Length: 135
Image (cartoon, rainbow, N blue to C red; front, side, top):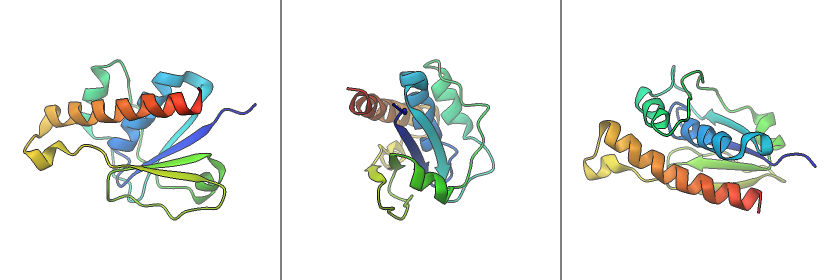
């Protein structure tokens, strides 16, 4: 049986979607085919996102932001958008869900503290998703 596949999408593909992909790879190894992309990709990975993940043993420093590949959207089992700004047009046969992730900056929390909270929120959701993909 083929491994389930998931595409994590945010706007820049520099922070949240890269964090989700890194955490999912760490949680599932090669049991899930993991991809990430952005609706308007940034030039580089968010340094604080990478730092927050390194604290939990996940290294995304070698990743680069990528644009959404429409073929990949059709090919994966699940597309997960992170946050409120990223949207991907639905495709028949592909499941979609949105994670309205924690946004600590709305509470005046910035910098590495913000990223740790975002990371922990995404990590909880990734653990739940990994369980749903591999009961």
